[in-house]
Image (tube, rainbow, N blue to C red; front, top):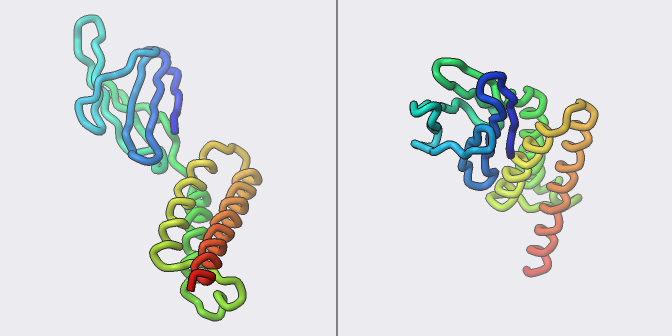
Length: 163
């Protein structure tokens, strides 16, 4: 996941965050900044070390502070993006723990279903942040909900056939 901010003083700022590890990196006008810790970086500007601190992350919104000035690099996710993403997890948890619903369409629940739906929740939220229009976000959510349900169903059928 990455974001680009064009600033009038500092130029092109590129923020990158790994989906799997959460590792963050910053580049300023194509030059990588040196990491001090997970949220602090520095670069040399005319022989002077300038420290840059990060606040937040890709999902909750990211602000960058340089020499006392704060810039929004990544806007926070909308409330409905969070709500729709959490609904994927809730659907799998409720369906997977209800014997009557699982007798209609079996899906894997518990730790396996929770893990799958948790990963799909984050992937869905990431894709929804990329898409700009609300109706497209809704289509993304429907697609990820169906994909999660189908994946949990296939795993349940595999486990049932192994018994």
